[in-house]
Length: 511
Image (tube, rainbow, N blue to C red; front, side):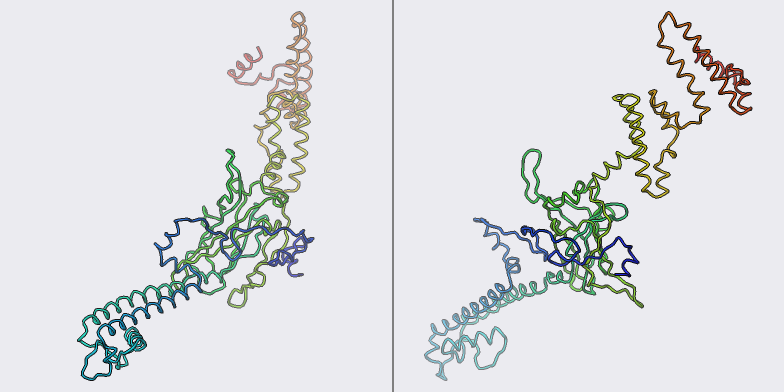
């Protein structure tokens, strides 16, 4: 435990899960009713076909596959029964020929040539068939050339025996060489886990291969089985949705030499986009995992399956590492194959996290103020609240991300995007005091435009007088070089040293 804390930190806690779902250090949950699974943990599908009616004849059209799919006890029964019936039937045919020809009554007559020598009852006819079928040939019973019907029956027996041997022995061979037992040495973790990996919420489970022989072209797929109702009111039981486990990047193609952790990134395209730790307690779903590959020794395709229900998905857990470096090789510790440990994981869904991040972004404030539904004071309060929330959220980020998300790093164009007076006030708050006083003069002239028509000349004169003093005071506070460019601080026009074209543009603008 001390080595684990040294490697992963004090926030991590080792959890060894068991098949019953207990074993991790959490309060014992209430015993829930066992839900019916679509696919068992061993890969068997809990589906039974009923009310086929006249469709059962389709099984006889593919008799070979039907026999292969039967259980072993039925296969052995059919194997023994078929050979027994065939042997008794063929022995009866030989006995009938001997009975019709009268060989049974003259079996001990040395001057008489029977169809089959030394066949005088049914047991002797049965022994002759077995010696012929098994090519034993003791030499005591044999067919003679005086029996053409026996020769024809012998040919029929050889053809029929070859067909029966090929069918039954081939069926047994295919059933014995089926790669279903190869799937017994392919392991899946008992639980799946959801935690953060590479900054993204990820669903993870583990697969492993116990044999030294490899699985060629191993590929893994995941299906989400969940009942849902369409907007049109149609109910879809066990609707199948695809879970991306790296199809676009090729991560679904496995090199299964050591245990691998399969990951499904939960994003906007994932069916788990709105899944949170709280909602998972009420959700009902089943994740079916299908692992396919070619057995290296036989060249046959093998498929292993398992499933995870919502009770078998652990939120905020990660799998324990099982690979260690030894002298000259890598060692896999399968005793920790199913073990997990707790890690800090937000209990919210990806959708909730994105919405919270979007609301805390400082770029949301100008767009809200531009909507025109709030006055200047409301916009200022909203901007201040947004700024404080953004600062609090950015304080939890690394230094590099704080520089990227802080207001100091915003482009200056964003400060000039506002068009209302409140937005201009918010933008001027970040400028130096001297430039604020210079920029405040047009605001006074803008306010005087709302005077009455009778007092317009007086108001404009007062405005010019009020604007001259702040302008002269602001120019006086500037450096000498800027004062010379502004006209020596005498309160005159600041375009004395500008080119003629710019002076003309300024004069047209003020007039």
